[in-house]
Length: 116
Image 1: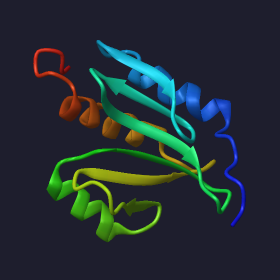
Image 2: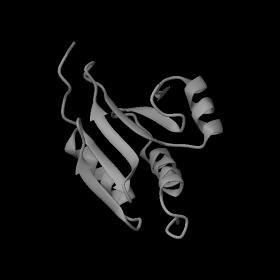
Image 3: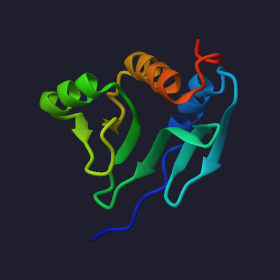
């Protein structure tokens, strides 16, 4: 197994710019990488994998989780959450699409009075 690389600061900044626009979002170091939360609920988590690739996980509706899982790379599913979608990040990532997905994740995790 390889070591987990640090996520490029550019990736963290781009994600932070999207998520910090919404009420109550905080950024913190995670056990690996960086995560964003609202009222203790994780909205997104970005980290480097042991394979040297970068990943972000975020929340989605159950039908979206299944759809993205079937699409395959750059999307993936995880075994630890029924509403979690994963996405591999690299220089070809669609940051506009990711921003939309992060907004959906915020809506799922945030109190309904806060959701945009």
